[in-house]
Length: 333
Figure 1 (tube, helix red, strand yellow):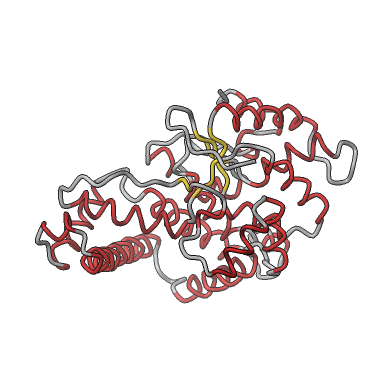
Figure 2 (tube, rainbow, N blue to C red; figure 1 turned 180 degrees about the horizontal axis):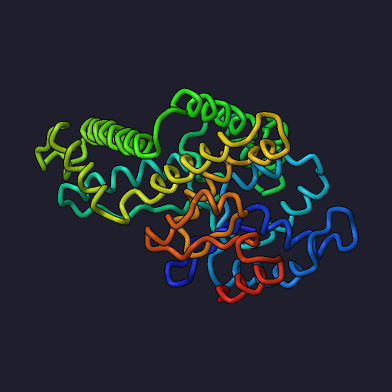
């Protein structure tokens, strides 16, 4: 089915891979080893109603995760189901991070730029540049199952390699500064955040200048001017840079958890999806309803509510699949 353009008058739902899969498998594979809790059976027709009557949002991350499944039949079944729904596609995370940086830099100097557009016109529309060969492949694989097939042939690991590498870096970092007090660690964390914001302001300033952005260039601001004003603005505005703030909080939570887990242990292997989970969360902050697993929810804490969004929904936080489904159903149109 063709992609759906986001309807700004209706709520937006970004359901994580687990929620989508549990709903599908509970109905499609009842009684099998892959079947999920029967409570999720009520959810599948409601997800389909969201797609039709509101905005069911998906991202390329969903497809990359399906491509990494070892159970190809189940992954393809889910992909075929999603392909039949009128879904709204999210932009890539790096696109949203770039767009919101430009928006908030301009806002910090008193300009009124158009709002960030987190939704893409189509599944493949999230990619900005195509070679003729890539365009031919995209046309040939224009469906969700086709895209999953492409990513599967690329031998995508679902982000697990990146997650393991990040966990190793975080453990080494914690060991290096293990003698620091919590206050010292937080002070360094805040210092690094301000440094990153200054770097970001400088990069965006150069981008806008080189692009010849008339409105921005007319402001006459220098790189030094915008760096300090941008940092002050972001720190004083609760809703500025939402995706970047979510990524920041999630990364800190991921680092704290990884440092407490032994490399190679069962608990460590639970972190294999963390890089993708963080990207899902960054995209989900632009949607009204966002679901995730309990570990991701703990890493996020209250950041969504601090940014003016409804808190994330997690079966582990809520208590049981039955209560999770009941809570999620109450949010549906």
